[in-house]
Image (tube, rainbow, N blue to C red; front, side, top):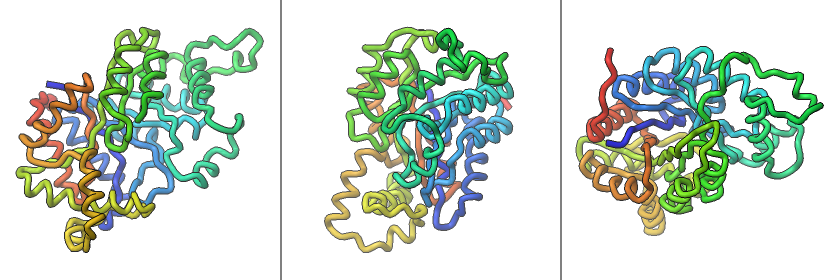
Length: 338
């Protein structure tokens, strides 16, 4: 069976404040570590009432410290928000503390609204516009030390300098990201849960054009999907009502905490809103384990995915843990030794 991983947004609900959402992430990571999940990645989002995780590198250290087997990484660091030297230093520190268990996933999107993006970046030197490629190139140079002769950065060293950067992954939701990951020879993770671009096209494109590099010899494509799993289809549909209402509100520009199931079931949906929810379900897999497997198998096959990364946003934390347990059983994950 295909390996499973987790992407966690540290979801804030109407009943779970941000600080509690962060503690829930740590609890879920410990749960996933015992179930046999391969990775646990943390997102970077700013100024969102529904997401409590603006600094994945802090959460990575906390989670790696309380787990034993699972790889922990960023899904991802939004590189335009950060000086490449700072990213190199922080992830070298994490690799030094937890050798062989850290991943550095990189994204090029703001991860937030325009005003917040400006507040994050207005003190960073650089040209206007999309400078992701420049920042990525600089980040790689901090590792390879191949700055041109006479460059001032030749006298600067990213510490600790006796450990490498962790494995690098490019995150994306388009063919641009898949092509870039292939050209530079890195791992690629595709965000099916919010992408408008066809997942199979992007992932097959990546695999076909991949060039071996010092970062990775063979391609590795992760398919990130949103899943809500329960013992029965009926229960899964009930739990998913919360995510349905949340998505509907986000499409209207309302970024509130995740509503409760009771609030979602009591909401007076119009016919047009019901149609929008039905369309959004193309990005959300809901059901019992057999139903989920039936829905996911064709997508995994079409995408030629090496790994499945699951995002589960639920109001109830214990129900979310149960969802991941059911998926682990369905995908026949090998539980980690105590």
